[in-house]
Each structure stands twice: as C-alpha cells, then as structure tokens.
Image 1 (cartoon, rainbow, N blue to C red):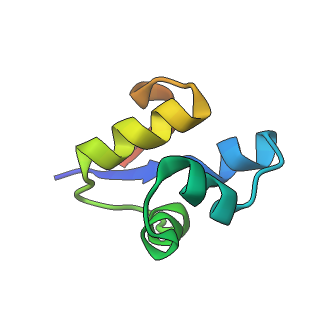
Image 2: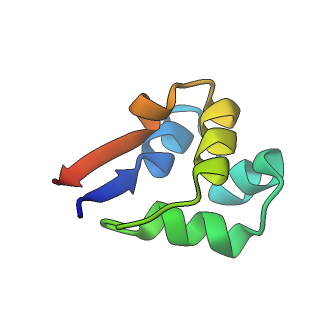
Length: 70
C-alpha cells in the first residue's frame, strides 16, 4: 500500500490563507484539516474530504495529492 501527502499547506500558502481559513471555507473541523496538512504520509484518506479540499483551492485531486511511496 502506498502513501500520499495532501499539498494543503502549499496551496494555502500560495493564497496567503491560514489553515483555519481553509477549514472554514471547507466546512470541516480545523483539527481534521490540520492533521491532513501536517501528515508526512497517509495510507488512507477520506475521498469526499479530498474532493472538498480540491474544490476550495480550485485544483484537481491529482494536483492536491502527492504520492510519496508506492
């Protein structure tokens, strides 16, 4: 099983958004977003959440998700 990292911080920094602001735009608990943003690699992610985050940043899922280990 591979590991992925969500590029949340990168996209937030490009827009000068704080994680709390992303959380509010996304409509989810800040601690969940923070966990996703800080994780160096995850084996599983909530695809619905990933789709919402991608929409907030107006990027594709492929742009948001970085495969770090296959």
